[in-house]
Amino acid sequence: MPVAAAEPQLSSGQKSARKPNIVYIFADQMRASALGCYGNKIVPTPNFDAMAAAGTVFDNAISTWPVCSPYRAMLLTGRHPMANGTVSNDAGMRDELPTIAKVCKAQGYATGYIGKWHLEWNREPFVPKQRRQGFDYWAVNNCTHQYMDNFYCTETPEKIRFKGYEPLVQTDLAIDYIKKNKNKPFCLFMSWGPPHNPYNLVPDQYRQRIALEKIELRRNVTERAVVDHLLEKDKPSKKLKESRKARRAVLEDDELLKKQYLQGYYAHTAALDDCIGKIRSALRQAGIADDTILVFSSDHGDMLGSHRMALKQMPFEESINVPFVIEYPRAVPTAKRSYALIAPIDVMPTLLSLAALQCPAVDGKDLSDAARGVVSDQRDAVLIMKMVPGGGPYIANAITPWRGVRTKRYTYANLIDYGPWLLYDNQEDPYQLKNLINKPEHAALQAKLDKCMRELMAEAGDPGDTQQILDYRTARSPRNK
Image (cartoon, rainbow, N blue to C red):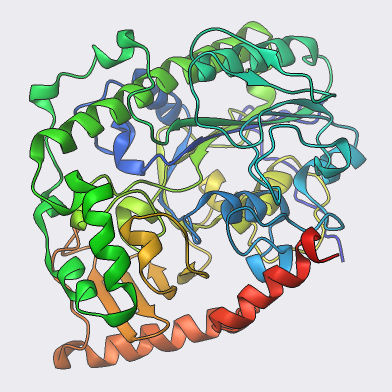
């Protein structure tokens, strides 16, 4: 049953006469450690840092299935993958489910979506109106990482071409949307493609902000035990060995190439910092900054060589720990850090509660009190997962699916085909260099975390059976209708 959300707590002691706007902006493949407000000393991110100072930073924002499509479906529905239908990339979500856009629209909001979508059964750039999950305004290229001189679609498959860097164009579209809708409540989502690879498709003006000689690799880049252990396994070994050629800088000790990847990644991040500054300025100029819930986050992180791995789909912090910064002057305290665990399924109920909007039944938790600074925590652990094998010659896709849990202190992961795999004390070992799995002195902790993982799997309707999940995906595919 829908539950009425609490009235926003206004810092001024006065209630706003209008419903607050919701602006949710997320990058693709940005790990939390890329931003200054999360401790990065290399990338200049003054605008993200200013947003953090004006709002609340969640230090334990976790991408629970760290890959594009599953995150996006959880974000929009507040439901786990087996409930929303998107159990892998390129598996479309269930159309009949409520989404945050449908809910907002039903309660008088204008709705809009700009940028990358990646919630279809294909990667065709045009998304038909009936598949837009409640978003009316539409400026989208379904799934692309061509960041220069590209195109987007609106109401028809006609390609609207543009010159220049895609996030700058998308940001201008968002600013125009803000200006046109400033006198009524709106819900706007914008998905930037960077800093997802290719790392070289970034304007020189941003690359010049990142001095190659000042880039420092993370301490776990030279860690070899995890990959060496995986190479001993029968099933993934072939793909892992193939990935040596495809990801040479990751598996081998090519320090320069790793730094060049990071330079491009950080250059993208610097560009997005300019963009978030423009959005915040546009909200102020429109006179609606105080009436807007502004969030910046990401769908997942990027390994970028840590543990000799690339990209995502791994249980390590570089892959699952993402930024989550929320600014809402009327209810969210300034310069606050929250250590509450927040997952993608929590975003919909949390934002709707902050906006005092009705929310349908969802799997996620309403963490609006954590955003307001009223409570510090509302859960002990979140389920983390890689539900199906992937494609492509890199390590994260080569290994068997896994499940695990992330608490505020520990990370535990279990390979579906092989059993217990990883156990880290993130408080004592923030770079995850000491794998405590199967150590006798940690047996009780491991058993407790394994029990927690299995309980959370049951709550999520996750059978833990890869073939059953693949059969579910196949049965839902329009190719079989």
